[in-house]
Length: 376
Picture (cartoon, rainbow, N blue to C red):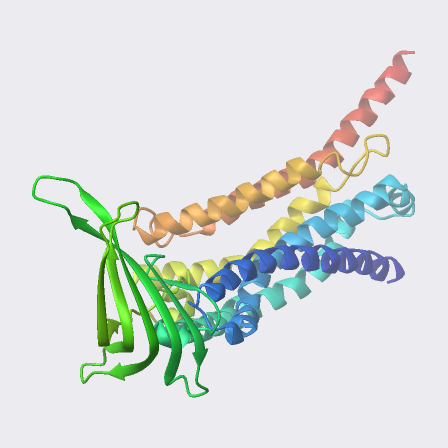
């Protein structure tokens, strides 16, 4: 039990460190993307951390298997490098026992990943989808921030206001400019035109059909083409501007938010493919453990990182093949009975071959040495 606790502690500590680093990297990249949308006024800054919290289970369900794989490679690689594995082997530690000890932390990770994949991750995606739907229902008026130029409609319109009331009902010192394409004359190319609006104040008006307009009061409208001195100025008392709804990029599939219990009873191929994907992630944990144990064996002269790159490439090939098979399963090009299981079977065979190859190699080397000594 002492050896078991020692090996498990080494693996779990390395797993935690690697997973934490990977999680920070992935979440930082996604947070920067959402932060850019918030800076454009597409997202409310107040929901950024809420979105990241709901997305965390989806990130962890893919990070933890990789963290376990790298944790075994790094932890066992250090033990081989320090000759601790050699000492353990001399005291009766076989490869099978080492694999059995490694499966214990793998089982803990698999249970956690299954909880994330089958329960928390779909719930988190559903909550994120609700937030994005609420944000998508907001208009340009709802996302204005006083004292900041705000781009809307894919950058074709920029709006600025000096002041905004607490109830967001009144604007003061409004400036808005919008680009549009127009034909100069028949047969000629469309050229870019600019409409610039300046007003002392503005307010929002909601029509019966739900459309919203920004009503500007006491201002000027300027129409013209950039680089040309043919601008037309028009003074107005009131002028209406249609408020477009910002397009929020969520990058979330609808089926990812479906509860697992609904997928189990569904006959739709896409739902069955999603169910197999969710079940594949916990199964992935045990197979990558079988792959990692033999790949972690290194010669002290070679260094602990010699097999790290080939091992990572093998893991990425496993994950890429799973994702590719999932896409083909969605399109109906792979029978549902075969599903994603053939990918797991393939890498299970690869793991078994790697696990059995090293003892066979040692036996062959021993026999060769015995024969050489007999001939001598």
